[in-house]
Image (cartoon, rainbow, N blue to C red; front, top):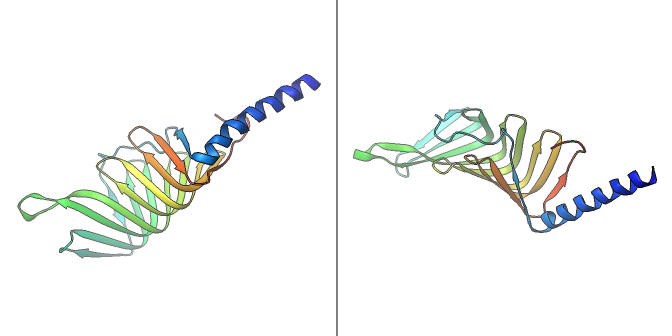
Length: 170
């Protein structure tokens, strides 16, 4: 019995030392099927109001904003959409979404919360900043900046990273 407790303690010490380096410098980790996504899928947006600026090629959605792309859902207080320059003076494709006012990104069993987020649609990169909290099943990781590559399903958390890993979870 004493040997099993020592072995468990050794595993915990190894896990803490691995996480300790990650906590100090940032952490990179894979996502499950959750936050990977298809950046070529259509983007649907719902909101309480919309204002459009022809001069700078933006649209601003305000109030209970919900952005959906495939299985990915982003909710926020406000989302400003920046369009690429189109041909013949026409509006181009969605280039970047700037979300603010408390942002939640959900897909599958994974969810991330932050103060703000920027989604570069063409590259499939989402950058969330300000008290970021990521949950993957029962595991939780927090930091100040989360960068998610939706194409590869990988992410990097930076800024005083803290994690809680549940025993028996992958």
